Every structure is written in C-alpha cells, then in structure tokens.
Length: 531
Image (cartoon, rainbow, N blue to C red; front, side, top):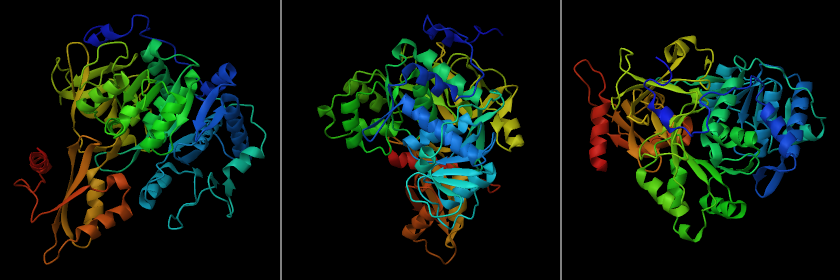
C-alpha cells in the first residue's frame, strides 16, 4: 500500500506543507542553542513577572551542566525532575540533555509509595526537587539539588548556588539521537504498574518539527508568546509548551499553579498567542463569573489534549475568544502528539483531527485486519515520534510495539475525510484531568483497609475533567465501613487525583457465573443515575 491509499487525511494538509522533511539527528539541547543565537536578547521565560532572556537561560543551563559534570554526572545517568512549572525545571531539563543524561519526569504530588516505585525502577542517581523528601522515603541518591530550601545535609546542594559558583560548560555531549534516551516518561498499564516510555532525542525533535509544520502560518518564529499552565512534568506540557516554545524562539509564560484570577491577569498583561490547555482549564475559563470583563482575543491558537473536550465548552470558548480550540490526541509513548485538528482547515466537533505529518495510522480488528471507514477498532500508530520502548520492560514493549506499529489499546474510528474519533478504551484506564488512573492500583489500596472485603473501581464520564473515579466496596462480615476513614486511607496512599470522588457501599458486586467481576454493569448503573 502506498502512502496515498487509505489515507484521506493527506488531502487536508496545508498546500505549502511537505509530507516529509528531515529530522536532525542531534542532541535536543541544540534547539536552545540555536534559539539563543537567533533571539538571545528576546524573552524566553516569564515567571511571576520576572523575565528571562534566551541568553540568560542558556547561561544558567550551561553553568548547571558544568556543575553537574564536576560532581560526576555522566551520559546515561538518570536524573529525576520533581519540579512544578518554574524556571528551575527548564534549566534542569536542558542541562541534563547537554550532558546526555536521561530526564525522568516525576509528579511532585506523588505519594512516597509512588515515588519509590519510580526511583527504584529507573535507578535514579540524581534528583532535582523543590524541597527535601520526607524521611520515610528510604532511597539513597548520589546527589540531590534543592531549588527552594536551604541545604543542610551531605550530598545535598542548593540549586542556584551551584549555578552561580560554576563556569558555563562549552561542550555538548554527542548522542546517537535515534537510540539515546532523552526522557523517561512514566505511564501505567492495565495492571496499574508504572512503565517508563523511553523517548529519544530523535522522538522529541520529531514531534516538535511535526507540530510546527502542522501549525504552519499560524505560528511564527520569534514572535509568539505561549501560556504554559499544563505541568511540564506531563509530556503534553513538556513538548507543546516548553520544547516547541524554545524551538520557535517564543516567550513562555510559566504558570506554577492554575489559579484562574491570576492567570487572567497574566493574559491581560502578556497577551499570549498560543495556549496548549486541557479541558479542565477551558471549563474554568467559560464558567468564570466575571469572564466577560476580560479580553481573551489575544489568542491565535489554542489546543486541547490529555482528555476529551465537551462540545459545549469548545463552543463557549470560541465565543469568548474567536478562536476554535484544536482538539488532538497523543500518548506518553508518542512524545506525545499524533493527531490534531488542522488550524487552517476543517474542524469537526468530537474529532481528534487528522494525523500529524509523517504519522501513519491504522484501525484494525482483533485479527489485526484493517477496517473500513466508520468502523470501530483499535488505533495503531507509526511515526518518528513513537517511543523506543518501555524502560526495563521487554515483554510489555513487545506487546505494544510490533513491526514499528504502536498498539494504543484505544478504540477509534475514521471518517471518509480521514478525521479520527476516539470512542473508548480497551483498557480499564480512567482519564482524570489528563492524568492516567488505573483501577487495579486503587483497588489494591482499598483492599488494604481492614473493613473492606471486595472493591471495584470504575470511571464515570465527567464534563469538567473527563472522568471521575468511583469506588464500590463491600464490607467484611460483621464490619461497617466508615467512608470518611476509607477516603483518608486513600489520601495517605494515593496522589489526590487518584482518590475516588465517589464511594458506594454494597452488599455484593455483580459477577458472572465463573466469578468474574462485571464492571460494565456498575458503569451502566452509574450512567443512569447521572442521566
């Protein structure tokens, strides 16, 4: 099959966009180096009203890289970045890449149990964090670099003191771009066990160039201002906010915490032109009581990722701004973007758009046979942004990657124009505000409670955050479940967004004749209650 057959989306690319283009096989750090040469005195970062030029940002990056090299950091070492949206994250990220280290993305809100799982799996040697970790986390790093607190322990260093006391490192470590890992982005599986998607320098460079080519004349080098409120430790924020912004020489307004009144003030002051957001943020905008008093027409382009965007929210935001949100699709395993609504093309409500350039897709049945248009099957993806595999998990890699095709586990359909629609997931994964939540992980925590005999966790559709987590529990004989205590038990062992928002106590759970739990019945009942 040649590239045109069965790929109607090719007809919807901009006329001036090349179907294929060269992806440089270089260290990803080069994008910062190149933009500094072109836009050195222009603003790279705006954070809490402080401006950082590209020249200053690169200087801090090179000094930190020099300090880390003096402390013994080497190519291939894993360094955890457990930092929220802050200049220190950007500095650490590119300093690590300059040395050929592997960046391990870590949500600062993870519980000790979740942190230890990542620390051990990735064998992390170095850590950048805002504050000291709780003493109850038994893990030993070679060095820890703290950005917000005073250091009083051996092998703990103050982040900015290191930078100010070290000369810039001039040499950038050479990498084999297609095989050397730049980022380990943790995601989960149907078991709830975390898996580290290995994203190479080539993967990440590819997704930057694919995105820029797709946006075309809606995005100009050296002229844009990006509002980055999506967490940088999330693959969507990392690529669509930071990496793409650095590549095009944009000013990046970093939002540490999404407090809407403050965000609106920043919008009025800095007039961002591009906003890669998530549905929860767009929902907050359209439901803000005084939103009509703010001018949001500065945006040229807004995109939505991480979760489905309700049609009503999309339409209301368009009325406020005059900009249609470009919905899309992506995965941690694909750096992340694979689909997007064409910014100058046709927009279809409910669609994730069309594949980015150099991205191929298939929809297949359980026999791996290609399916016709408007037929539901599993979405398969191939492209230069697809991961190398899962860190230290060869069996899972062999299941996900076959003949260069990524088996997403998501159910989708394609219309006659090549626009794709996600209709469900083969997995039981729940998507909460753009973060993956895995029922088995939560069920395991529920089962640890002394009063719980049985537990089942499902996702219930929610207009604001995509889905909410609901837990069904059955008490042990002669016991009563105190839901306040049970929820507290969950908060102690799970990140907040994983804690069920709804609990229901039952005498029994629906099962078939062989004892298999029938979660679909629970979902159907919950949906009827919502309706």
